Image 1 (cartoon, one colour):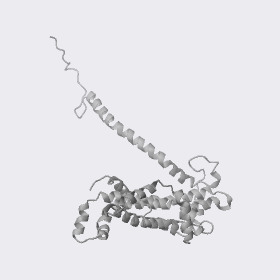
Image 2: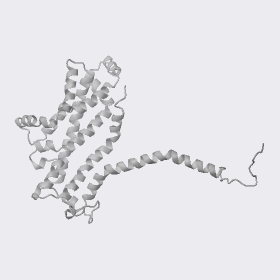
Image 3: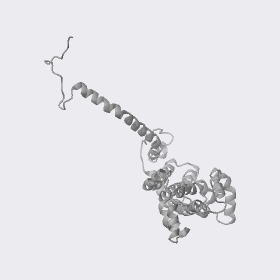
Image 4: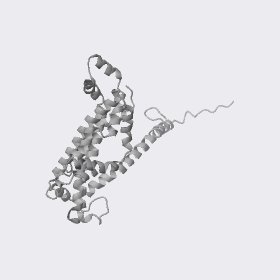
Length: 309
């Protein structure tokens, strides 16, 4: 047999790290193939994020446009950027300072958070830890209220609060929060409490604790993610609520921010688009700050929802 041997006189190119050039090319192709799906995933996430953030960025850009450019300038960036819209907003509306609207929204938001956390946690503890007659039926009825449109309840609720003389006050907007009428939050906390080991309650009862001590000393600290998750949603829903204040509040000095936006559009029978968008940007800041501060607890609340104790 004839054996073909490589010519030792012809040198094979070798890199400084000891690899031949063909081996170097093969080594370079493998990392590219391995990182290609990751790169495509990152590009897709960036594109989706840009699509979601586009309305927010447009609103910030439009808040710097003078009123003369609305309708004529269809571009993304203002031709003559100005801060006059923010100056006009800070001067107030119809003689009412802008901070008053922020204060009203803040009072409603904080009241909604306090009422929701207290009442919903107590109702959830009762449904998940106390065995009483008709508990399953009442829980099913409470869940059924999630299917009931809010518009069905507008007229009877308005008549009740009118007969009580509570129209043009904050009570109609806050009373339901302290009476555990938010079935979504009750259901959320019930799922958390049911996942807690019952051995903790039994050990506390051996030490002489009743339901009150168990609730405040054991249950509440362990459902902290659910409480903060409920607080975030309650604050955001109350801050953005428009229909409720529109029904029950008549005095402009008691208006929250959503109704203040309507004043900008209705005054002098013309719409001040620049000021409307400017106050909309300012109204987003507290919500974004509230979410950024507590987003870790929101993620923890969702992540631990399916865990068993």
